[in-house]
Length: 62
Image: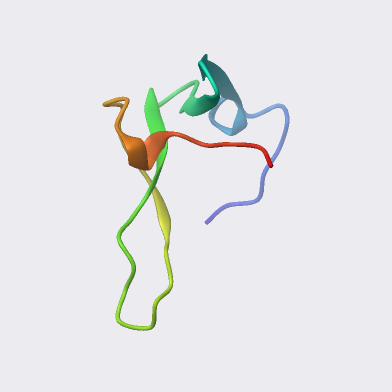
């Protein structure tokens, strides 16, 4: 992981609203932030994946 800089285009994200939720798409890679299934320790991780609009790529503010 590299340090985040607001001058780095890869550090910028688009928020795409999809009704009650939203998706986060990276400006450079055009990939979306997605949640992975729980691991054996009941922990969920996130990664960048091809944008599909699936439930694992939908985020909510509570």
